[in-house]
Length: 290
Image 1: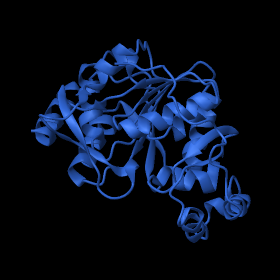
Image 2 (image 1 turned 180 degrees about the horizontal axis):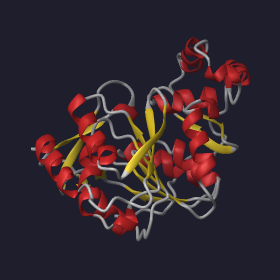
Image 3 (image 1 turned 90 degrees about the vertical axis):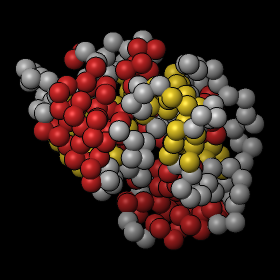
């Protein structure tokens, strides 16, 4: 199910910055200090004792941050483009107006907003209803178009529930549940539902589910849907990390061009190898999703 409507939410400016927050942002927002370790205690001080949203800017856009329960909001509110700076640099270099940016695990819209600000056609996939509402609100404040798919991505059609690991909404994962109301579907189904004929940049951060989202897609999708670039969070589980390594890079479909502590940038090999990864993906899928 696609959503392009804007969320109903209090007007932007309802939650102004406090004097302390203004000072902290002046020091760290879009500055070299925002890249340094010294930012860490200031990030804590920014939201310490604050349980309400904060209305400020990000990439020159109006954004409502919820730093008390979302690490992306917490760091984005203080550091701005200094947070995930290298990943933003990758996008800035590669993304052209009109390109398709597919954001899997979109959270509150950090990367989606950046891509939209550069004229991209943004399709965001986010299963958490709370984060969906926040993403739609942020796009609404700026009258930017976005297509939201309010579902999870995985290897099969099933119902799942949100499982929180800690107080950070963005680090939650999903688990199968017969009573849950959140739908999970394969990525290829989502891409077809969105009417995409190609993907320029795919960013994925779904807390350890990346192999189950991507390997079935590359097994079943036509080659013209293979993204030009992939920004992918490093898998913490060794088996899943190896599955992705074998399925995407070992197959010759992608090469790793850069990496940060959190993410890798993969570039599609053109021309694609004559032997696809379909057989390898099948084997990895059976091993890690049984």
